[in-house]
Image (cartoon, rainbow, N blue to C red):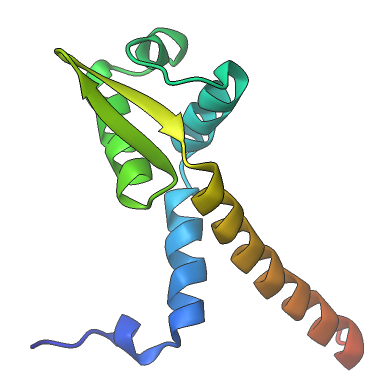
Length: 112
């Protein structure tokens, strides 16, 4: 099995980086915002409110689903999506813990 440089980092570092990568595109942030505003599963409406083609929205939905931040179910010929609030909170907690650690170390060191 081939190893990559990514494998040399701690699981926590990989997890924070994966979450940051998932959230790194404004379309994904906008999709989460749309889903949160509706507070219900949404099918075709996401494409209607974003300035992106359906295929592009589908790719971003796929990334969010693969990361576990949203769930998707097939209803007939359409897919309906909801935020996975438990996973979103878990990822935000890990990210915030990491950020708080950086801030605490920076303030302790007094650098720059």
